[in-house]
Length: 163
Image (tube, rainbow, N blue to C red):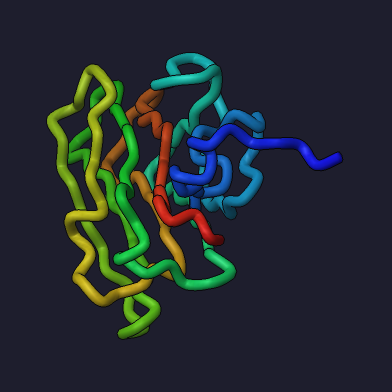
Protein backbone atom coordinates (compact mmCIF):
# COMPACT_ATOMS: atom_id res chain seq x y z
CA UNK A 1 0.00 0.00 0.00
CA UNK A 2 1.35 3.44 -0.94
CA UNK A 3 2.10 5.89 1.84
CA UNK A 4 -0.43 8.71 1.97
CA UNK A 5 0.92 12.27 2.16
CA UNK A 6 -0.92 15.04 3.99
CA UNK A 7 -2.82 17.35 1.60
CA UNK A 8 -0.48 20.32 2.26
CA UNK A 9 2.49 18.31 1.01
CA UNK A 10 1.22 18.71 -2.55
CA UNK A 11 0.71 22.48 -2.22
CA UNK A 12 4.22 23.54 -1.24
CA UNK A 13 6.97 23.05 -3.80
CA UNK A 14 10.18 21.51 -2.49
CA UNK A 15 13.12 23.83 -1.79
CA UNK A 16 16.45 22.73 -3.16
CA UNK A 17 19.80 23.91 -1.80
CA UNK A 18 22.19 24.21 -4.74
CA UNK A 19 25.43 24.62 -2.75
CA UNK A 20 26.98 21.34 -1.64
CA UNK A 21 28.29 21.43 1.93
CA UNK A 22 27.86 25.20 2.33
CA UNK A 23 27.99 24.89 6.11
CA UNK A 24 31.05 22.58 6.04
CA UNK A 25 29.26 20.22 8.43
CA UNK A 26 30.81 17.18 6.73
CA UNK A 27 34.06 18.20 8.46
CA UNK A 28 35.86 18.40 5.11
CA UNK A 29 35.61 20.21 1.78
CA UNK A 30 33.21 17.78 0.10
CA UNK A 31 31.82 19.58 -2.98
CA UNK A 32 34.62 22.18 -2.99
CA UNK A 33 38.11 22.43 -4.40
CA UNK A 34 40.62 24.37 -2.32
CA UNK A 35 43.83 26.28 -2.86
CA UNK A 36 46.11 27.83 -0.27
CA UNK A 37 45.89 27.58 3.50
CA UNK A 38 42.20 26.91 4.19
CA UNK A 39 40.89 24.42 6.73
CA UNK A 40 37.76 23.21 8.50
CA UNK A 41 37.38 24.54 12.05
CA UNK A 42 34.92 24.26 14.90
CA UNK A 43 36.27 27.32 16.73
CA UNK A 44 33.59 29.84 15.73
CA UNK A 45 30.80 28.62 13.43
CA UNK A 46 27.91 30.90 12.44
CA UNK A 47 25.58 27.90 12.79
CA UNK A 48 26.08 24.18 13.23
CA UNK A 49 29.44 22.95 14.48
CA UNK A 50 31.87 23.60 11.59
CA UNK A 51 33.01 26.41 9.28
CA UNK A 52 35.81 27.14 6.80
CA UNK A 53 38.84 29.07 8.07
CA UNK A 54 41.10 30.94 5.67
CA UNK A 55 44.54 31.19 7.30
CA UNK A 56 46.57 33.00 4.65
CA UNK A 57 46.43 35.47 1.82
CA UNK A 58 45.03 34.14 -1.43
CA UNK A 59 43.35 31.09 0.13
CA UNK A 60 40.52 30.01 -2.17
CA UNK A 61 37.57 27.61 -2.33
CA UNK A 62 35.65 26.85 -5.54
CA UNK A 63 32.45 24.99 -6.39
CA UNK A 64 31.37 24.16 -9.95
CA UNK A 65 27.79 23.19 -10.79
CA UNK A 66 27.01 20.26 -13.09
CA UNK A 67 24.36 22.37 -14.83
CA UNK A 68 24.18 26.19 -14.85
CA UNK A 69 21.65 27.66 -12.44
CA UNK A 70 19.53 30.51 -13.85
CA UNK A 71 19.12 33.59 -11.65
CA UNK A 72 15.38 33.29 -12.23
CA UNK A 73 15.52 29.99 -10.28
CA UNK A 74 17.16 31.52 -7.17
CA UNK A 75 15.31 33.02 -4.25
CA UNK A 76 18.52 33.69 -2.29
CA UNK A 77 22.27 33.41 -2.72
CA UNK A 78 24.63 34.56 0.00
CA UNK A 79 27.10 33.72 2.74
CA UNK A 80 28.29 34.74 6.20
CA UNK A 81 31.89 35.76 6.98
CA UNK A 82 33.95 37.45 9.67
CA UNK A 83 37.60 38.44 10.06
CA UNK A 84 39.93 38.37 13.02
CA UNK A 85 43.42 39.73 13.60
CA UNK A 86 45.43 42.65 12.35
CA UNK A 87 44.80 42.45 8.62
CA UNK A 88 45.94 45.22 6.32
CA UNK A 89 43.21 46.11 3.81
CA UNK A 90 41.09 42.97 4.37
CA UNK A 91 38.53 42.03 1.78
CA UNK A 92 36.50 39.09 0.66
CA UNK A 93 36.34 38.33 -3.06
CA UNK A 94 33.44 36.30 -4.42
CA UNK A 95 33.76 35.18 -8.02
CA UNK A 96 30.66 34.17 -9.96
CA UNK A 97 31.02 32.49 -13.35
CA UNK A 98 28.24 33.60 -15.70
CA UNK A 99 27.37 30.71 -18.02
CA UNK A 100 25.45 32.84 -20.55
CA UNK A 101 28.17 35.43 -21.26
CA UNK A 102 30.98 33.02 -20.23
CA UNK A 103 32.84 35.51 -18.01
CA UNK A 104 33.85 35.62 -14.35
CA UNK A 105 32.38 38.51 -12.37
CA UNK A 106 34.21 39.41 -9.17
CA UNK A 107 32.59 41.07 -6.20
CA UNK A 108 35.12 42.51 -3.78
CA UNK A 109 33.90 43.57 -0.36
CA UNK A 110 36.15 45.38 2.07
CA UNK A 111 35.10 45.14 5.68
CA UNK A 112 36.63 46.87 8.69
CA UNK A 113 37.41 43.63 10.50
CA UNK A 114 33.89 42.56 11.45
CA UNK A 115 33.86 41.16 14.95
CA UNK A 116 30.70 39.14 14.24
CA UNK A 117 29.44 37.31 11.18
CA UNK A 118 28.28 39.60 8.37
CA UNK A 119 25.82 38.48 5.66
CA UNK A 120 26.80 39.09 2.03
CA UNK A 121 23.93 39.08 -0.51
CA UNK A 122 25.38 37.81 -3.79
CA UNK A 123 22.06 37.40 -5.63
CA UNK A 124 21.56 41.19 -5.79
CA UNK A 125 24.72 41.55 -7.94
CA UNK A 126 23.76 39.01 -10.63
CA UNK A 127 22.21 40.43 -13.82
CA UNK A 128 18.75 39.23 -14.86
CA UNK A 129 18.94 36.57 -17.55
CA UNK A 130 22.27 35.14 -16.33
CA UNK A 131 23.02 31.62 -15.11
CA UNK A 132 25.68 30.61 -12.60
CA UNK A 133 28.15 27.87 -13.54
CA UNK A 134 30.61 28.17 -10.65
CA UNK A 135 31.58 30.26 -7.65
CA UNK A 136 34.86 30.92 -5.92
CA UNK A 137 35.54 32.65 -2.63
CA UNK A 138 38.92 34.07 -1.65
CA UNK A 139 40.57 35.90 1.22
CA UNK A 140 42.61 38.78 -0.16
CA UNK A 141 44.59 40.84 2.33
CA UNK A 142 47.98 41.25 3.89
CA UNK A 143 47.99 38.86 6.83
CA UNK A 144 49.92 38.90 10.05
CA UNK A 145 50.69 35.73 11.98
CA UNK A 146 47.49 34.39 13.53
CA UNK A 147 45.12 36.32 11.25
CA UNK A 148 42.23 34.45 9.67
CA UNK A 149 38.74 34.83 8.36
CA UNK A 150 35.84 32.45 8.87
CA UNK A 151 33.23 31.54 6.27
CA UNK A 152 29.97 29.68 6.90
CA UNK A 153 26.45 29.05 5.63
CA UNK A 154 27.02 29.57 1.91
CA UNK A 155 23.59 29.07 0.41
CA UNK A 156 21.82 29.25 -2.96
CA UNK A 157 18.13 28.36 -2.75
CA UNK A 158 16.03 27.16 -5.69
CA UNK A 159 12.42 27.51 -4.50
CA UNK A 160 11.18 25.51 -7.47
CA UNK A 161 13.29 22.56 -6.37
CA UNK A 162 13.33 20.60 -9.58
CA UNK A 163 17.02 19.94 -9.64
